[in-house]
Length: 253
Image (cartoon, rainbow, N blue to C red; front, side, top):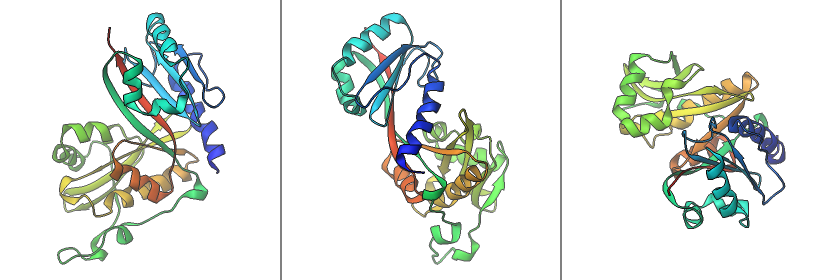
């Protein structure tokens, strides 16, 4: 599936999450809709998604929508991927993002396994690494979230996974875990979390590869959202293409 084919599927997803009569227009355009029920951002915030060179925005009420329309009226959509640009256009209390939106077709998928992803060392021969499955809520996954810390655990949201959870572990210690949440428009939103003591060993790639393979076998569109470079590198290694950006904006007075 080419980038041109991925964009319409991703747009269908986000237009649905907008919960408003707002659609992506021609390249460069920014369309704003009123949607207090938008799933593009936290409640009461402004949600912005850019895909394929155009953007949709949801605002919580008419007044906020009018402010956003006026601010973005003469601004090309692609420039709004920069949070600093957004801050110059609107009074901002807080911003979440920008977050890169990546999508993957079966043709682009570059699978890896735990043996190739994690090099052997003096304490851990490569043959000892294998992918297992655990159910959501398993005590070993809860221990992983605790070890990762509140912020990383909240961002990964492995407790919201609806697929099997693919893990690499040693005994009861889960070193990395990944699965996906079933999103609308037959989308598989990938969630991955690695134990702080085991990062940089390729375990996120291995568990994510198993997750993506499962999603593709189910006929789903894998989605990868990431802010930090290491996570984005993992996605690119697997074949994800970054075709969009998401930003959430809390407006000030």
